[in-house]
Length: 257
Image 1 (cartoon, helix red, strand yellow):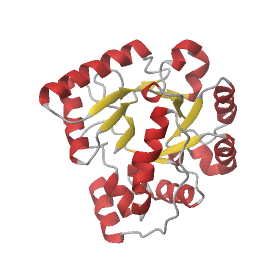
Image 2: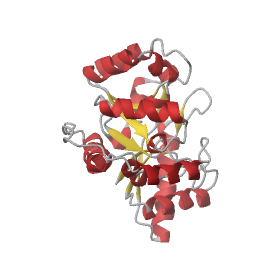
Image 3: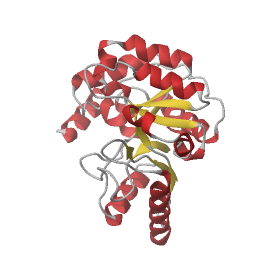
Image 4: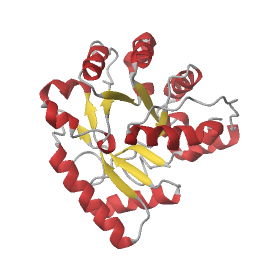
């Protein structure tokens, strides 16, 4: 699997604070079947990361992973807060795409309103960048106005939801909205958005299976992410019939506790 959204770099945001913690996160990812992780530290008013800082962190983690023999590769990326886009130099912004491809991971606000987010997305696309919207299921503004999200998707944006949302780790309302987006064909990837090995752990496959989306797992975690990294066209979603595992979903919710 390819994890498109993971806070694995040490000491630069609210993810791991040491290389040891980064390695612990990577080990859990590897055991869960992830082979490629895109490092997506926050780029925001709170965490003013730049591409040089991210590149150094990626090199440090990959060097440590190789020394340990952990079969995970880390690629550079960033989770860029929509409110910070105007403060980033255009050349700097193009250096913070996912894996060096044409896609940027754009974080919507967690506020009740998402006014202006759509214009930010459209402006990026007009500049030749392509937009992956991070965890839209957790954006209260989209809960109030899903039309804004739908219009962005129809214009060429795609979305990446958090696996934990499918398991109810952010509440039942978020879980239901995530499934609504799946049902309306507005989900293109599932990533971990992991921050550590325990509280915000890097699970993906089990959550997808529990949500009844097993037939889409390859598309959500391999085919679409690979196309994002390479810049190839996003493959069409295969037909599927949801088969939800209530027992497994209950266990995942208990673990989220």
